[in-house]
Amino acid sequence: MISMKIKHLPSILLLTVLSGLSLSGFSHKSSDYSAALPFVPESSSLFLQSIDPYPGRESATSSKNEFWETTLKANDTTSKALQTYSKFDFIPGEKVIALEDFSEISLGDFPLEWNTNSSAEIVRMGNDPTKWFSMTKDGFFQPEFITDMPENFTIEFDLITRYRSSNILEYSFQLASSKNPSSELAENYVANSFRLGWLGCNEAASFFVLENGETINSNDGLAVKEFICAGENYEIPEKVRISIWRQKTRLRIYANQNKIVDIPKALKTDLDYNVFKFGASYMNFSTRDDLDKFMVSNIRYAVGAADTRSKLLTEGKLVTRGILFDSNSDVIQPGSFGVLKDIASVLNDNPTLRIQIIGHTDSDGEPAANLLLSQKRAAAVKKALSEEFKVDSGMMETDGKGESEPTEPNTTTAGKANNRRVEFIKL
Image: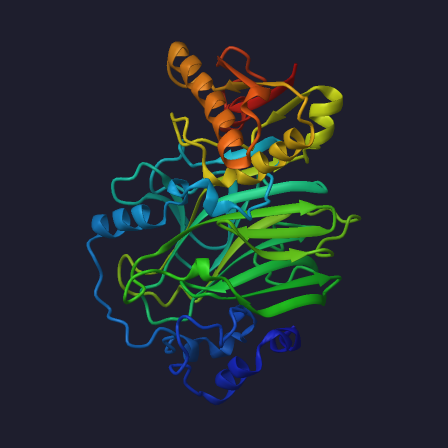
């Protein structure tokens, strides 16, 4: 096992670990050293804790409320215009299997549908109502509601990382096919798996693909600028939306609007990928309060791939849950760009087509308010298709049904997510 670990180490980091050379000459905003730190033998951990990959940085911290409020304002991707996502081709799965926002979990608790070999808790940031799953110690954290992943699925989640210690931190997530997920929970090297790792608040990242215990693809020189923390001393953590899209053997991963990985043969179609887990390394050396952070929220796991052209032209009806709006609003989130672009392509290729756009909501709130909201959202979709994608507005009319036509009971977060949808009906 040690030989596998050494094999993945980039030469500069391996030399540093073995000889004690300092990494202080490397810039924070470079990818001169790899994010593949879990491959470092455990015996080198005491040396690693003394390395500061962000030299010259002050150690003072802001007040907690000011810190978190600044983070949310600076990094909220939903406020960005659709144009920012003009190259975003991600299309989320059509049927939501799970939507985890931790809204029903008490602060300080560990959610029951997760497993770990470490510790974590539900927290809030400042005055923001969003709840986050905060991982504060080394280990692995597995949402057990993501299992038996089919050939076409998507996983999305919001991610916040914060680096305030002098440790080298490494965060990761992994897709794996495991015969015993519980016994292999603590394994970095599941025999059939894909793993992406990155340094805390740094662009240096890496991935590897294992098949039957052998590395068949890897890259320890990725640079993901979305992971870099803001602030003169990198004191402001970064909020990033991660989107994972599997289509048979192909795997694509996005950080906000940018595609960071696109591997045509990352996964095998004859294996059951039943594990998705997060990992944290070298966090145990944090000694002060409110230091390093690794948190996730708003996890959306969905399956199925929409054939937009066939649904609209042949079947005459397309239902999408991939056009997302700000809460209680008709403002379209920029992550919806890929779905809108796909629909606009069909409409522009068929100029004689006429459609009705119908909005639907869940049952939260008053029925009259939900009816109005669904109508406004349908109108917002028409406006976006017309103004951003040049679809003839005369091809489209709009309506809204509010909460009156649910496809599932509004008793779970996943059920509510599936009821929040937009339909396109061929006239």
